[in-house]
Amino acid sequence: MKKILIAAYSLGLGGIETSLVTLIKELEKRYKITLVLEKKEGIFLEKISKNIKIEEYTPNNNKNILIRKAINMIKQTIFKIKNKNKYDFSVAYATYSLSNGFVARTASKNSAIWIHLDYLAQNANNEEKTKEYYKSLKCNQYKNVIFVSQEARNNFVKLFPNEDKRAIYCNNLIDAQNIIEKSEQEIEKEDIEKINKKDEVIFLNIGRHDERQKRLTKLIQIAKRLKEEKLNFKIIFVGDGQDSQLYKQQVKEQQLEDKIIFLGKKQNPYPYYKISDCVILTSDYEGYPVVFLESMILKKPIITTKVSDYKEIEGKFGMVTTKEIDDIHEKMKQFIKDGFELKEEFNIEKYNSGIVEKLEKIINNIN
Image 1 (cartoon, rainbow, N blue to C red):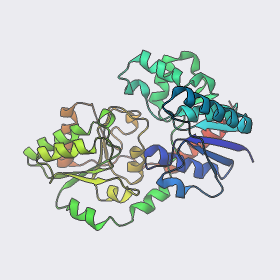
Image 2: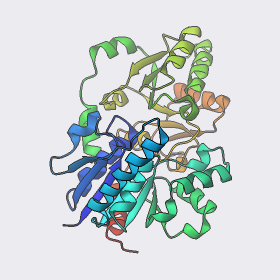
Image 3: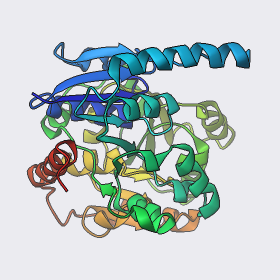
Image 4: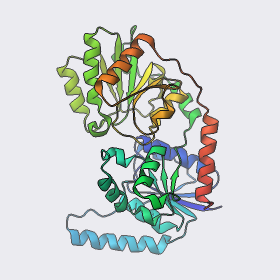
């Protein structure tokens, strides 16, 4: 059985971590896996099979730069002695973690880095800034660079034309059966009381509260307009983050407590899809949003801004808007009045089998 190493930051609650757990669950059927975490923590630790070996590699963060460098040099040397090219495949799954990169590049000549965001979009199409970031990740030192969205992959190749063959589009696997089963679980009584659904259209936003990326202030401004237009709706926020208090303060100032409901982070968000009518995304940029897949599996229409791979949604699974408040407002207003009928049924078996086929080729080094 071939040995593979996956380097990740932690197993806390999040879209990347959810995808990682699903990936490990699939790969352990065929490979012997070692998982190396920068921080051995997170609620998903209990989801990892006992057959998976979990190690921790944490860089030293001493404030004294000389001490920090000396300790990290020793750590790197020890890791190299133990693991240099001992694996058939290795991957740095947390793009932003430099220690993940070191671990993956050391463990195998057949190494890859997993890119979860379209960094050109994140950097507002600043090509030089994006090129420098990819160079800092040492992408040229991996056998393959894997992108979860086609758009991110294309933008990378636009910046580095010679990397076309090493840049691979391979979306995230999704455990549809698990999602469907969890969606049937009961919602907490306290949340039902907060939502207090009457004859209202319920919009659902799931994700980290980070204004720079998610732009949830737009939803708050739109909610004010929709309320003034006397439309019957609510917006549920499932998630939290660094800007949660900012959003709560804005909602209070605009007197929208009856229209925007904060439910916090949920280990199981899927029952909230069931009680919602539409999933709403207002981000400036994403990788391939996991909420796209979750919505399609649970047969919920989506309204999304033009983030990576939005064309897969447009007209079939929901409506696409520009990133302008006026356009998002019009699409939400349209949905409240007319709804949206799904045009296709998502074929999860075809979707996952295509990804597994790509992964097999990458891991087994088949061109």
